Length: 327
Image (cartoon, rainbow, N blue to C red; front, top):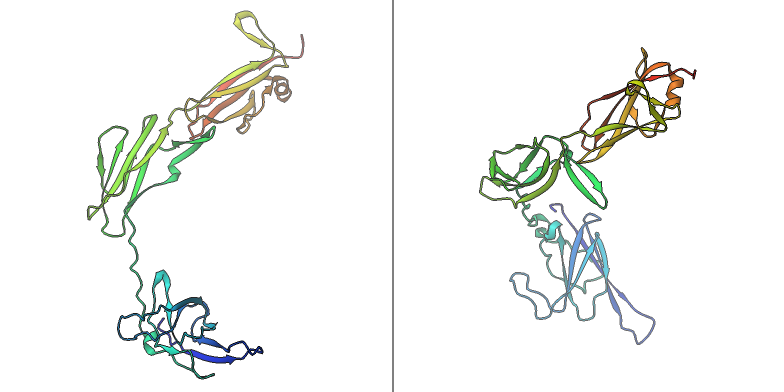
């Protein structure tokens, strides 16, 4: 607001054709300022005191507007006006001198120097409060029905306190119903065991200001799923308790996980002395007859499951012998 502003004021007398109508004054104000600047205009019936903090008996008419020009029609008994600039965050500039609304048409008036030379008072920025942040990357949200359950996908949680004023003195935290612990600045809290947890934590800055206690509920899942093979279709047992299957039989992989749930089952196949295929997601039962068309002799299926937080089951192997076409 240190740039020079010039206020041009023109008063025009407009005479209406009707003899009963009174002439109306049109006050055109042009300000040498930015097109998006904001101003406040006061129209007074009695001239306000410009040097003392006194208020005229009759209150003014107040008009706030944006832009560097405005046209107003003062009421008959409003004889004076003044303008001041409005800044950001409610800041207000100094009032101009008090002008008469009855100036001669085309008469330019300059805004007093103090209107543009002094910087308006701006409020001090509000300092950020002490806050402790835990990254969302540490968790996986698993939807169950209409709710989402938070699972910790890592073996620890890192709390990162911030304070823009005096700095962080310590971080205090408590796990479930345990004792309060203290750590300096950045704290990495381990959670190696599977289970349900409630973490309470807050930070304290150098001035002794305490952050409100934060509460985080989550589940730690460390155990991988378990996959089993189910045979679908006719089968029988032969000598030596050996299972014999029909070519129409199917192989189904079924996984179970007691915590976060199974995300997917992956499998790979290979013939005897052949090249193992890449792992792919198991979506449909494997038909033995289809496998028989790919290779002869022994056949292997490698499979494992992954849960929602990334725990992987050790790879398992299913080995079986494909018979000949003869009866």
